Each structure stands twice: as C-alpha cells, then as structure tokens.
Length: 378
Ligand code: CP
Image 1: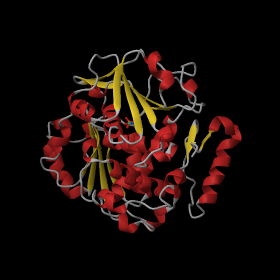
Image 2: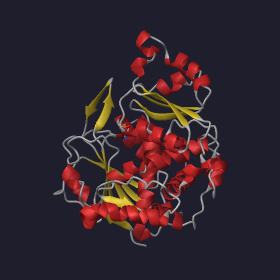
Image 3: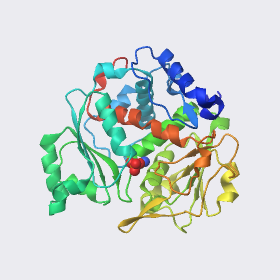
C-alpha cells in the first residue's frame, strides 16, 4: 500500500478548495467542511478505517470510561489504535448531529500557556455539544491568593464532569487528585507527561502509514523513528517515545539525538531496556538523518522551574539531508529548530499532526465520559 497523501505543494493555490470538495463529497452529511492544514501533507482518515472495513474497537474504548488520563504508560497498542480509529470516524463523519457530549461540562484549567491543547480540547467538547468552563490562566483563580490545587480539585467536583489540566509542576496531577473525584486529563505537567499529545502524534502516524497499526506490519513498511530532543525533560517527547515503544511490531529502530549525555530520564530507562526495538543515542544529527523515516523534533524543555530551549544546535530546514519520503513531526510551538521553509514541502507532517488534535480529543472525551453509545455506527 502506498502512503496515500496529498501535498499542498502539488495542489498550488487552487488546492485548498479542491481538497475541501473532496471532503464534502465523501461526507455529504457534514455541514461545515473539516478544517485542514493549509500546508504540507494532507492525511486521509479513511485510509486508517479501510484496514478494518470502518470498524472501531469499541471494547478497548469502553475500558476508558470514568478513567483519568495522566500517564502514557496506562495505554497499550490496542487502545491507541482504537482511539485513532474513533478519531478517524469522527473526522470523516458528521457526528455533531448525534450530540454525544450533550449535558456534559468539561473544565479546562490551564496554569501554563497553551495555543493548541486548550483550544483543541474546547473545540472538541463544543463541537460534540458539550459545554466548557475555561480557566485560560490559573492566576485568575484562588491560586493568586494562595489556594491549594487540592482545594480547587474539591470545588471542581460540583462544577464539571471532566477536568483537563495543564500545570508547570510535575506533582500537580497528584495534588489536584487528592480531592478530585471526576476524571482528570493531564494536558501537560511540568517535565512529566503529555499523554494526549502522544495520542495525536500516533494518530498522524497511523493515518500517514496505516499498516503501522497492524500486528503483522510488513517488514518494508516498518519505520525508523528519530527523535531530536531530550525525553527526560521534554514531556511531549517523553510521551511520544513511551507510546512508540508500544509499537514494537512496526517500529524497527529508534534513534535519540540529544545534546545531553543521558537524555532518557528515569521514567523511560526500564521500558527502553526491556524493548525489543533497536534503540541508540547519538549527538550528531547528520550521522543518522538520511536513515530516518520519521523525524520528531522539539526543543522546549522544562528545567528546574522554567522553560528553556535544549538541543537548539540541531536545526532542520529544506537543505537538511532528509531521506526522500521522510516526514517531520513537531508538537509545536516551534522555535529556530524547525525552519518554516519546510512548511511547503512533503516532509511537513507537523501541520497535519496538529490538525488531528480535535478528533483525538473528541474520541478520548466520548470514551472517558462514557458516551460511545451516542455515536451512531460504532
Ligand atoms: N503541543 C502543545 O502542547 O501545544 P500547546 O503548548 O500550544 O498546547
């Protein structure tokens, strides 16, 4: 099977309207065309569903009902694929008509800045007819007066049905859960984890190359992942690596490229040691770049009590010696590590990756809030 993708480069300025027409034709019920990434690869959610004749592994999703999502280690390959299948279904069908989250309230409590995570969660809830209580800046809460997160968690029990929290402290998840009885979705906790970002990353990969979801992925479709960054202090990189270790049947190699002597960190030392995937660590990106099928890059790290750019000497641009057909992923926000002269190229998977966020978060919320029965056809 070939990678069935389209690039805006090939489509030119008329390509955006052309792509929208394709979506409308495939989904005559959809009243509003799904927003798509403006540049780079366009992924087709249908390609992932084709592998199962449109079926979604509902049993795996039902196990998430009422669960908090705090650490990527609570997932397994089956659940990740099931979430991606439901996300693909949501991306290709007008399930807004089903109103799956009608009557549910999500609290988004962000004690740290965000462009994508908060807004895509809020969009996900509202598009499924749920309601949102939004705290875009934790300083407008009692935190500014010295209130504890544990006390705020107690209050949230009566205000909403699910809490989506981002916080600069790694311990914040445990702190709010001292009193919170509603499911908590960790939207990034210091240098800890960013589990929903990793689900979004794998959704993009599974749409790009659907065979990666198979237990018997053909040998010539397996991928060599390169990760430029320091998982020990970069939560998005850490969570992506953690999920990638669960795809041992489709990931042949993982190469970590970092400035640090020991970039892995305590959380992942054991899973890496136990993984059958060939994993190595290098500090010269040129050494490996031409071998990588997927290059995941990030530079924002949480060190001590502040954010810093790490691994900033590694820069990708359109002159980088990338393998033909290789894709670049980035959780965004980016800095100088990823040049915008790559945006128009077929290497750009990062915009399509970000564009999938709403559907993955919808799939997760419908599962956690036990509303799968409201989605027709699964
Ligand atoms: N990927 C991500 O977490 O982006 P934001 O910081 O904008 O939420």
